Image (cartoon, rainbow, N blue to C red; front, side, top):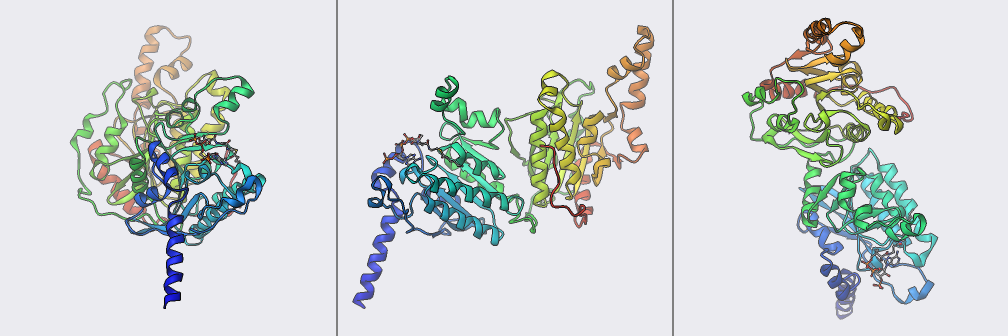
Length: 511
Ligand code: HXC
C-alpha cells in the first residue's frame, strides 16, 4: 500500500507541476499583461468541471541550444475535450507561459490528435491562439507541425465547425490555421495577426506601421475582413464563442438544435409596415426589420464592422437556427461591392455546410460601378454570391423589401437561382435597372417633357413587384407586418427539403 501511495504522490506532484505550465513567475507576467493563462481560458470557455486534458505530460524532443535541459510538461499547448451547454467540443490553447506558446513538433502532435478526435467524433473544435509562432530552436520540425495542422484544418472544413480565438500574438504562417477555420474572434488591443510583423515590414519595404495598425482586432474587423468578431475582453470573447455554438450543429450530418422560445410564431408587427420610407431614395436600417421578425428580437451579427452594406448573422425563427443575409440600405445604399460579395458568399457557404436555412432580406440598387471595383475584380467576386446561393441546398427564402435591380436582384437568392420561397413587399421594385437609368438609355434623345412622362410610366410598370409576381418569380406579395409568420411557415414547409447537387469532386468556385 505504501508503494502505491508513493506512486500516487509522484503522479500528483508531476500533475501539479504540469498544471503550472511555465511556472508561477511566467503566469504572473501573463496576468500582468492583461491575459489569462491557457487553462484559465479553457475553464471559462467550457461548462464547469467538464474539461478532460490530454497529453498533459508530453514534452519536446529538441536538443539544440540546451533545450534538453529544459523540458516543461505539456510543452506549450493545453489540449483536450469538454462540454459547452452540455454538448461535446474539442479544444486546444497555446500556453504562452511555455516558450511563448511557440509551436514545437510535440505541440503539433498534441494539436493534430485533438483535431483528429474532433473530426472522427463529429464535434466542433475551438483553438485559443496566443503564440510566438514556430519554435525557433526546433527549425523545420516545428514548421512541419504547422503543415500537419493546416492539413487537418482543411480536412475538417465543412465537416465540423472550427472556431479560432486570437488572444495574443499570431504571426507568420501560423495565421493560416485560424484563416482556414470558419470564424475568427479577436480581442481589442490584445490580439495581433500578421504574416510579417512591423520589424520585417520596415526592413523589407521601408514602411513604418504599428502592430495594431498592421494586424490588430480593429484592422482585421473593419478593413481586412480576416476577423469575424471583435470583443472588448477575453471573457466577452469566450462567452461569445459559446453563444455562436448554440446556433450550430455538431457536424455536417447533424441539424442545429431547436430551442424553446417565448415569442408567438404568428406574431404580426404593425411597426414593420412603417419602416420603409415612401421615398425610395431614403435609407432605413435593415436591422430594424430583422430584429422585429426573428425570435425575441435577437440577432447575433457576424462581421458587424466590415462591408457594412451587407449584413450577415444568425437568429432563430420558430426556435430554428437560421442564417440571415441582408442588404443594408443605411450604408452605401446597400450596394454590392467586392467586400460585401466576399462577406456574404462565405457566410452562405458556411450555412449550407452546416444545414442552416438561409433567409435573405433584399434591398439592393445593384453592383457598385466604377474603375476601382472593376479593376479589383468585382466580376470575379460578385460571381461568388450567385455561386454560393445557387449551390446551397438548405432551405432558401427571400424577402424583397424594396429595390431588387438587375444582376444584384438575380444573385441575391432569386427564385431563378434556386430559392424555395420568394416574398416581396408591395414596396418592392424588381426591374432591370432604376427608372432614371432606364429612361436615359431608352429615351436618350427625347425632350425633357417626354422623359418625365416616360419616367413615371416606367416606375408604374417596372418599379413594382407585380411583373415578377405575374411571372411566378415572386411566390407571394406580403405586408411587412406578416413577415415573421410567413417566414416561419416557409421554414416549416421546407423542413424536410430533399435536394442534392450533381455528384462532383468539388465545384470550381470563382475565388
Ligand atoms: C521560441 C519563443 C518564440 C519562438 C517567443 N519565445 N517566441 N521561443 N520560439 N518563436 C519565447 C521568448 O524567447 C521568451 O522566452 C518567451 O517566449 C516570451 O517571449 P517575449 O518576447 O518575452 O514576450 P513578448 O515581449 O510578449 O513578445 C512576444 C512575441 C515575441 C511578439 C511573440 O516573443 C516575438 O516576436 N517572438 C518571435 C516571433 C517569431 O518571429 N516567430 C517565428 C515566426 S515564423 P523567455 O525564456 O525569455 O521567457 C513562423 C513560421 C510559421 O511562425 C510558418 C507556418 C507555415
